[in-house]
Amino acid sequence: MVVRMTTPQTPGRRSSDGVRTITDAKALSAMANAFRSRMMDALKVDGPSTASALAARTGQAVGSASHHLKVLSEAGLVEEAPELAKDRRERWWRLVDPGTRWSRADFADDTAAVTAAYAAEALTVQRQFERVQEWNANAATVPEWDDVAFATQNWMRLSPAELREVADELVEVLVRWSQRQIPDDGVEREPVFVFSRGFPAQP
Image (cartoon, rainbow, N blue to C red; front, side, top):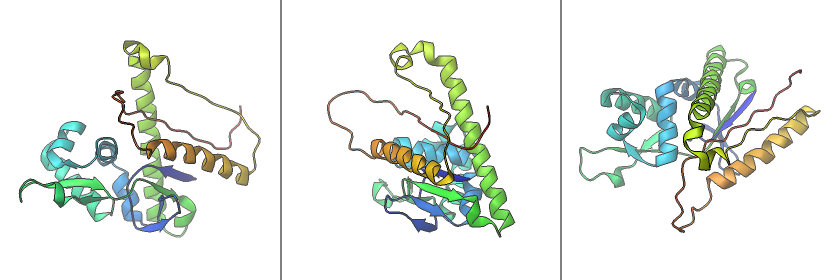
């Protein structure tokens, strides 16, 4: 199982498109926490932030947010942005890198790392499912978005190499749109969550 996400930089290998392959179990363990995952998402969507702003965004106490930021920092997932601070007491944080991926095959000899990888993947699936449920429950209240939001699924016959090619093409499209320069045209744009999965299955 290979997981590729738009989350921050961690120790590991970096590909030509800027996506870093995680090779550190500590980073996987740090990501396998609901609050920390939400905080990374908030930093991705909103940009650099303070602990207090992240606490308000994710519904937790400031002390808890500060603790989670420390864990993420020690894991190489976020870093301080001192140039944004207005005084010595203010601390700003940002993502280190826009993309990460990991493969359980890289941790075959490290039981703790494999366990952390499964936990991080399980959390990702749970949060994807929860977001879909929340959207379905509220879609009727925003008809302008309900008309353009999409879901798709397809059955294909592929080899492992072909599935990798499909994944690379899909990721290229999503990364291109997520990293594009936002036009200064006065059009209001909302954060949009897009995810996809591909794996062997039977009807």
